[in-house]
Image (cartoon, rainbow over all chains, first blue to last red; front, side):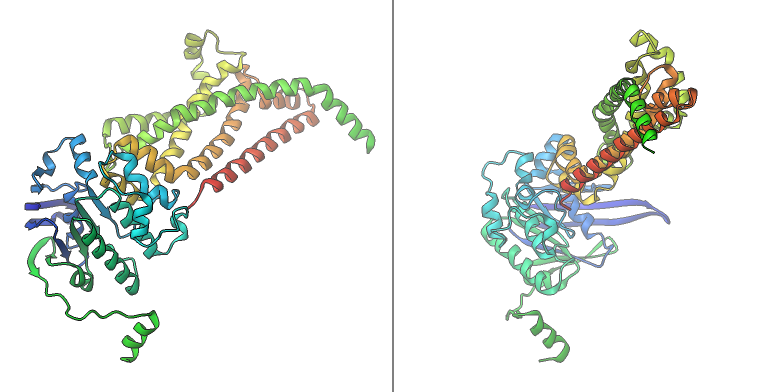
Length: 245
Length: 228
């Protein structure tokens, strides 16, 4: 489905040239949930952005399906981007638009054959009665739900998640992970998740790539948790962590 | 005490037609300046933003050309700009003096340059993530501008326009030099040249009131449109 072949991104920094991404190759299968993990500055977000051409590699080839991304013309590229959903660490909602307008935005840019409705996606992410609110009135977790709803409305074939839970607290992280897992089950799609949070990767992905200083160190098959631990409240979590109750 | 007030009122009534005419002339100049600011200043400021380094339409030549244009117009002392433009105005409009429309040409030029800079600043304040989101959705440049950038910067664009408006009023007071008239010219003619101080202060108070109202309206509108 997604194939990176020898991709490198070179920047001209203060100390001369350096490779933010250094000769990385890997494949993501169709319908897989694939993780990209590493410390900050490891190059994982840059790598993710090659897929929808928000960043372009200095060398190497990126193929999505049978499309070679960096051979596309301007208009073909926008057609390619329109079928890939993306959610962001800082949610990137338009604060001057209501949730309804935010979620509907992708449908105003392109024609989609079989899109979902605003009501359906807001229902799916658990915000059915907030369509007329503005992002400024929401909590971080709710904003990310809107971000997910906005990405899902087009029924994307690929969903790119850039640190989707890094701005959120632990229990909200679990909620968002849950929404993303449900989305993967409900709509056939390939998901890539960039994060430094190992528990997020563990509960979502089948495989993940480990990045360090721009290089791909390892690709791991993940052994899922056999028992799901979840806390009912923040108070219970505090007791568990601080008092070993 | 009453005598003074009575005399003042009768003088204001006497000068009212002249004051009203000068306000009309100011209105003409302001109308041209504001129209130019919106129709040309807004696109120019957007172009400055879009063609800068690292932006979606990065183009060093267009950027530098627009940037130098704005800098030249804005670095001209306004009085010299008015004088320097005389031959040009005469060529395309037929006359360069004694007419508020002729006087509107330098007003329009400074309005375009000034508002373009405000627009550029407003757009630079839009978070980077907004542009990135638009690109990730495959938005074209015009979609990026209309559906993302202008939406997120609209209250800042209005506040910038209000600030520009106040500057335009100030610029318009110079236009008496080339017979453009206007409220500023009125104040100079009566107050400075004829020592009719009370009439000059009346004109100045009228200007202050106009500025206060526009500033209030601008901020109110900006606040109403800001949902952030």
